[in-house]
Image (cartoon, rainbow, N blue to C red; front, side, top):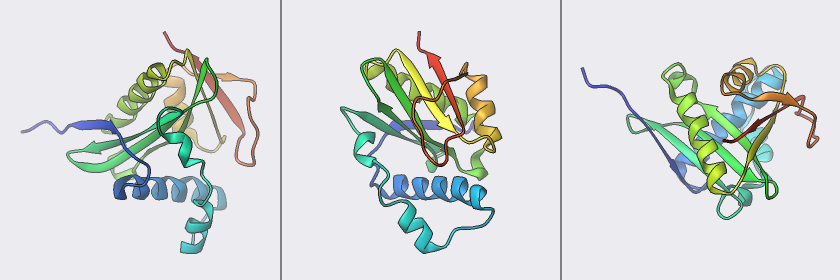
Length: 162
């Protein structure tokens, strides 16, 4: 039997696969927050001002992961300053969870952060996103004081890159 494989590569945020993944990410995290599936208008409104220009060189990167050629995962990295890069939009489509992609995605995002010159990665999330929090802990992220604020930020994590 052939071994199923993941590939990860930087991609523009406006490609069809990247847009679809960002839409799924937004639907997942916002849907959990509101406890329901979002309407089309809510998707469109929520995705208008995402700061997408930061997810491209020289300020950042956006990775798309494919499992056997199918768009299955994404994540972004944004350089905050000369030392820190922020992980954002870390997402694996539900059908592809449990297949090892999350660990590969995290490794790829950390490599991208190093390539941008970062010595530390940080991120923020919500307390109810327990799977994401477990992933971050598994990769050596520890809780840190808040470095930013916003309506959906409840816990902050950081990691020194070595």
